Length: 386
Length: 75
Image (cartoon, rainbow over all chains, first blue to last red; front, side):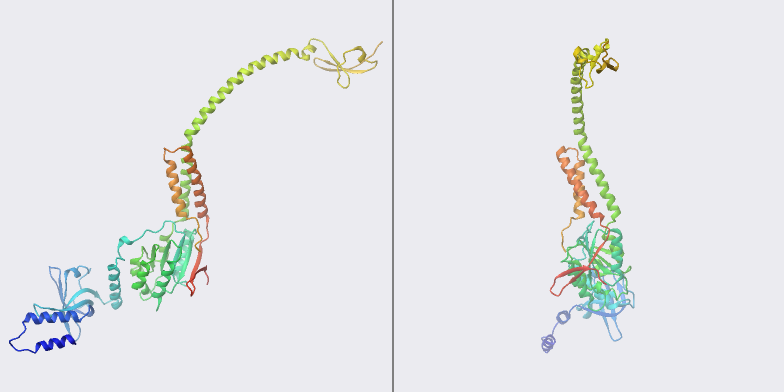
C-alpha cells in the first residue's frame, strides 16, 4: 500500500529526527480512517458499559480477535434497547485510532441484533435509513385517499388470494368502481423488479388510487416489499397508495412509504372505498335539502303571488256583483214579455202540424188538425164546422 | 380507456355547494331557481352513478412496444 510505504520510508530516520508520540498516533489515525470505508462488522459484545454522558463503550470479539468500540450518544439514543452482554450483533462502524491511548478502535454508528434475521435485518435498516434521508418516511408526505374513487389499480399477483379478496370487498361495498389489475409476481427472484415495473405502469393509467400488496406468507415470501427500489417505486406513484403486505407483526418498507398501510388486502379494500348504501343516504339527504332549499326561497314569492291573487278575485267579485244585479232587472223585463205569461192569463196558441202559428180563419180548413198550446201543455184539436 | 365519465366525487361536491348556497338566505329567486335546476341535474347524475351494481374488473397488460391494453380479467 502506497501510504504504508511512505510511512515506512518516513520512519527510517535518525534518533534526532524522531517522531513524537502524538505525531505517530495522529498519522496512524489518518491512515486508518482514509484506508477503510464505513463497514459492517459482526461480533459478540463483551464488557459493555454505558456512561452517564450517554456514550457506550464495549468490546466486539470473535474466536480470533477483539476490538474496542465506542458508540457516541447521538447514535446510541436512536436504539431502543441496550445490547446485552454476549449478544451477537452487527455494527456499522468506522475504524479509527484513539490517540490519547494509542488504541485502535471502532466508532459505531449503528448497532443491530443478528439473532433473528441477521443480514436481512441489517439490509432493511440500511434501506430504511436511506429512505429516511431522502424524506420518504416523512409523515407530512402522506396524502389523503380520495373519498369516492372510481378507478382503482391493484398491483399484485393475478393468482393470489389478495386479488380475490379485493375484488370481493370492493364488489360488495362500492361496485361503482372499476378495478385495474396490474399483474406482477410478488415473490421469488426478480419479483422486486416486476413490482417496480407494475408501479411505473400505474403512473400511466387514469386511476384515482392504487393498492399494492399480497396476502400473508413467510418472511422470505414477503421480502420483495422490503426492497429499497420497490419502496422508492411506491413513493413515486402519483396517486395515493395503500400498501397491504399481509403480515400482522412486521411492517414492510413499502408499508412505511405508502400513504396508508393496511394489515391485509381485504383491509386495504375496506380503506380504499366508501360504502355504497351509506353514500346513497348522503345523496338522498342532499336531495331533501335541495328541495327544501328551493321551497324556502319561493315561500316569499308565493305569498306575494297569493296576496295579488286575492286582490284580483275581490275586484272581479265586485264587478260580477254589480253586473249581476243589472242582469236580474233585465231578466224581469224579459219575463214580462214572455208569451208564457200571456198563456198564463188564459190565452191559447194554435199551431199546425209543422208548428206554424195559426192566426186567421182561413188557416183553419174543415177537418184540419191543429194543436193548442195552453199554459200547462198542449191539446190536439180538429176543425168541425156545424 | 381514459373515457371521460362524470366523476361522482365532483358531482357530489358541486351538489353540496349548490345546496349550501340555496340554503343561504339572501339569494334572489332567479338565482335560486337556476341553482335548483343545476342541483337536480347533479343529483340525477350522482344517483345514476350509484346505480351501477356490478364491479368492473380489467386486467392491464403492456405490449412489447409499450402500448397499454386493458382486457377482461381472464383465467
